[in-house]
Length: 310
Image (cartoon, rainbow, N blue to C red; front, side):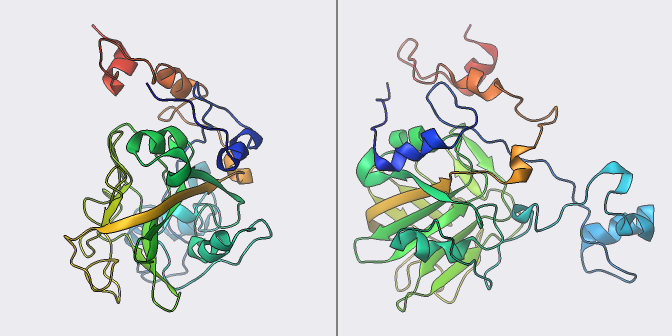
């Protein structure tokens, strides 16, 4: 059975966020549906397959309509995480960035849902514990997160998870997910998702955070991280791994690891109503209310939560 989370400065912000909480006191923010119609273009080939296809099928007047067939067009301003991560643009700091680390990582969040939101420290491995249990206890249901880790040899690196963690054993799609590392001069280098959105985030309840099968894999219990770039996350000037000069199969040892999430929501998220294919109000909380209970020495799985044990 998981122990109650400690009352620390890094967890106190949760109580100030407002919104729903599940049975473990974890706030829940819903994911948003979207309609991919692409930006409106005036004549000719746009270079975007979906935009061109829609134009050919329904006509160019549909592309010029901001709400075709009553469906509001998706824009980068409102739905930034429905586009691949930018690796050349950087966000401006906010007044709420009151620590050296927040000031350091804020630029990474350009064109993400967290770019203009106040951030709070949801998980600190040195405070809450090095392990998949404490990690998921602190983060499941908290929404998008930015992980920042430091190796014992001083490398600062991590990843952005736009979908957040749930601990249901899912391999989650996320086109805007990215990895990052700071080079020797302190400049951030970002590695965007490649090959489409598939398998961007691997969210296993008994494992630590993972971006793709091999992009960045963190073993919290062993305090180790491995990285291999090129298959699911693009190679950078550093080569085949986030850790320049290292072999992808060789792990780096970790000194600390923290995850930041937003402590507030955008107006779009506040006013959002789920559709029939998403979690409705209270449904996720109901499924997870017995997460900490042990039946016959076994942790109940998702099937058991949905349909009950036989």
